[in-house]
Length: 254
Image (cartoon, rainbow, N blue to C red):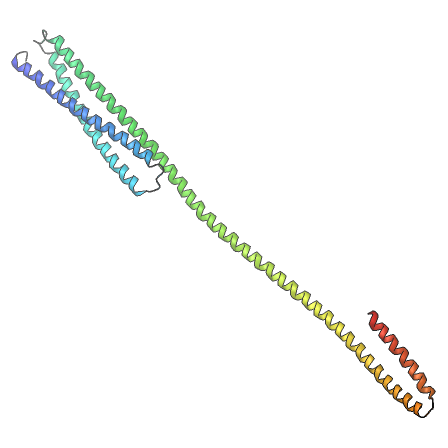
């Protein structure tokens, strides 16, 4: 293998290594952009209350992440295999004169493989950490929104019950006021009825007295025409006058 065939074999391995490294470089750049866009989209949607679009975007990004992770891991495995073949070639007999140059080239490919591997695991770890954190925050936000929604319904129901209770209390107060007014009106009417009965009784008494006065006056007039005085009528007139005066005084002071 130290001859021409061996040289071609080494060059084929180097070509494979460079091709894999180029593909890995492009894949890692795209992978890094995917992780960055995932984080940015998460941050931009924290204030969004829509549930449909974020879930679709996250699902698409998650699928892309899984697909690219598998592809990069496969490329890393292939590059590792090529580096192992290159290491085996450097240990074959007949390559001692080229061993220093071969080892230098091999070490450079190994360093590139190590850098790509570290970059991949770092980016993947950041992505998984962001997704786990955002999933946790999303779950907490959903729980809070669910609690708020439930509390909002309970608060509205409680408010409705309180308003209805207040309406019932107002109705009770109106009924009590109406009953109080009716009772006061009844008492006033009863009092007025008694007062009117008393006035009627006194008016009847005065009417009777006036009738007697008229009779006495007629008798007096007749006696005056005859130039005679009836002492009985005089006594009766005095009694009637006294009674009339007492009744008028009683009505006036009541």
